[in-house]
Image (tube, rainbow, N blue to C red; front, side):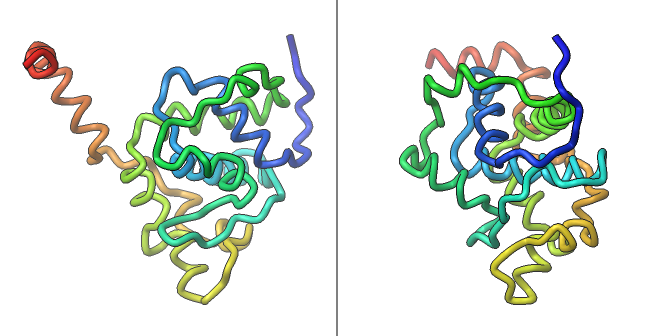
Length: 179
């Protein structure tokens, strides 16, 4: 089934719901991690299609970029995993949006929230620059002129270290689970 491929902005909350619907069973998604993934979807859209994926504002949160509508919708989960049965039924978005979400989730969702925060709050990134200027929002121009537009997912992260250990010593972790 093909979907419309127009790049019309989509509400950020729909992006978050698609992430939960498509990947909520695979990855441990907290509210913070979900917000960071939505932010990186915006960055990926600007890279790939030269247009924002959503028009909702991205605020300069305490630790990193936050999309207020998404944050408020899932705030009641606190640090727990975000799960809502309604989201499992979320309709697919246009082809461009689905491809962007799949790309971002595939590269960033395996990272821990701490890894994603480090990636999102780098000194040369949009969030840090907006914060340094005293802005309450991370604008599209902030993103376009930041290193986030060319930033790669780091390989020296907690998530990658755990994956390396799991691969190198598969039985050791199983033994620890049972001890």
